[in-house]
Image (cartoon, rainbow, N blue to C red):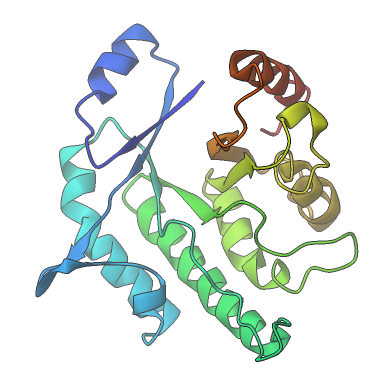
Length: 231
């Protein structure tokens, strides 16, 4: 079982007392010391080298890590946006690849920095439906290989977010919810990372859909997920 705590980490001890085998993931929303109203994101560190940006990220959050030693897994940037569009709405693939190359190196360094102090990283933390993937289209995933390989080496996790908006889980087509299977089968496994654990740290159905039995849908989704040992 997994629990995720955001900013308020006091419940970690209580949760672990109930279940010592619980894996707790932390996410800290940090701000810049010289501008407390500005949240630290990967995008606003993009002007730095990926290594320097990762070092700054970990430095900013280091006190949080120290004060919350029960939490061993930490997320980085939340739902980073790296896709660049042309004026006609199409994807600018070269610029998008450059962004993912930067982020792949950033996450690789963050994994190693956390590993050096006995912590583990949840890498990626991508929004629903991203990054772009198809059975033979991996331009956004190939630049992430350094980070994924480092996560594998240092016992980290790949974090994804999944939601459905127009259909219940049981009627989805696998592009929004259960997209993780495409990531695993099409990209991770063929690249020797089939046993890199995936964690869905956000998952749900948009509440615009009112006429569904949400509890039953979650039970159905849970049954499906239990079929995938890497999740």
